[in-house]
Amino acid sequence: MRVLFAGTPTVAVEALKAILSSNHEVIGVLTRPDAPAGRGRSLVASPVAELAMERGIEVLRPARPSDPAFLARLEELEPDCAPVVAYGGLIPGAALRIPRYGWVNLHFSLLPAWRGAAPVQHAILGGDDVTGATTFLLDEGLDTGPVFGVVTESIAATDTSGDLLGRLAVSGAALLVATLDGIDAGSLVPTSQPLDGISLAPKINVDDARVDWSAPAMHIDRLIRACSPVPGAWTEFDGSRVKLGPVALLPEQAGLGPGEIAVEKQRVRVGTGSHEVSLGEVAAQGKKRMAAPDWARGLRLETGVRLG
Image 1 (tube, rainbow, N blue to C red):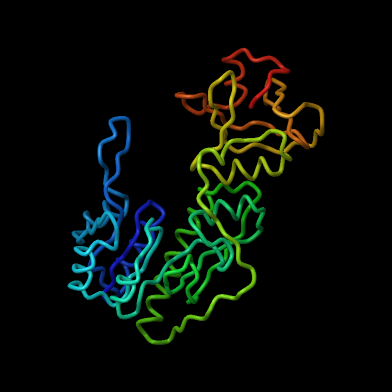
Image 2: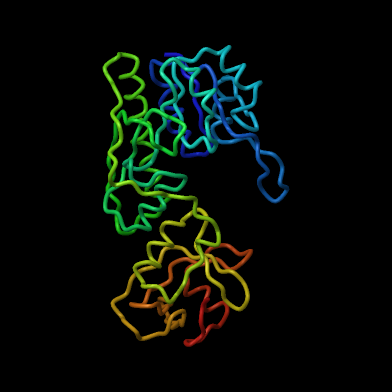
């Protein structure tokens, strides 16, 4: 099939590579416009755009996919199908109707669970044991279209969203190619999503990633792993933000008050609303990440000071 691939971040690159290695022809790539990045805030192409340009593929970067110029070019390209992976914008009905077989979205959850922008983060935050990826026919709803196929993935107790998304990007890419193959062969028909089991996964912003040390230790552990690496969990110390890497749950209970720290040679313990946790890597504002004991020694912290 002639396909137009839509995607923007690094997690979508694996899927584009898989399609480029398949029997399908990538006739163009739709991605978000170049965005400012780095200290100089110069405009940088998306990871998907960079790969497309390396392969000599036409790149479309409309401000909105409803732009008449983009819709006209989409008509000219005459794609049979448009696979989508984390494009980052809503595809309007006018565009949805152009490809003969529609737009096929790869979503990183087991739909109808965790519909929305941050399914992997919410699966970890919700304490799920299993998640996965789903291919479905895109419609104008929020991840509501009929499903072509799924793959499952266990969530380990130490998984961050980055860990989990990295594995799902690979297995999901294979699922997406298999879905395109089935559509092309006429052997794959989507089925409606069930009406029960629906949950939403809105974007997690920086404010959501602030650690509340009065919460139970298990919730704090899940929040930090869900927000690693993006947007990055954080707390406050001495008026400045400190970024936090994953913590370790400890058996100690109620020895320290919420946010109160105990500095030891090999670890830094912190009190929560339940059990204590041991800090992993931390990064003071404007500084590189380092092991918590090194951070504490550098600041000459003493037991009894508080985070948050």
